[in-house]
Length: 125
Image 1: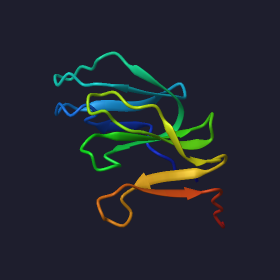
Image 2: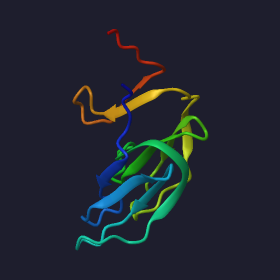
Image 3: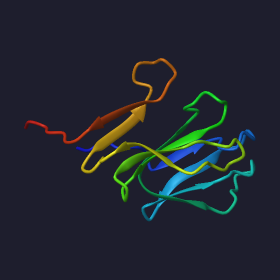
Image 4: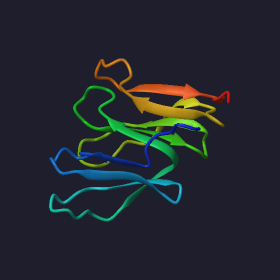
């Protein structure tokens, strides 16, 4: 069984208090800003091909940032948020994630996003 990042993330990407969607569409990372009435603005495609995605304030500046496992680059890519629903160009922070299984979460309960990464997982039956 492979564990991975969620394919749909709910977050407030632009700080307006509305729920925004961050998701995978045909392998491409995308997001839609919420209007606050149950509708969403048109999708914005990100240049990364997505195999896992997380949204959190990773650099403690009060703006939501994105972590994307880019399947084309086989890398973990960080996109720093501008606070208005746009993001700075991606920065590769970990390379060569081929055949890797990843999971983000606050595993040690310190309020920070942690990354669990394994090349292969074997289950004995």
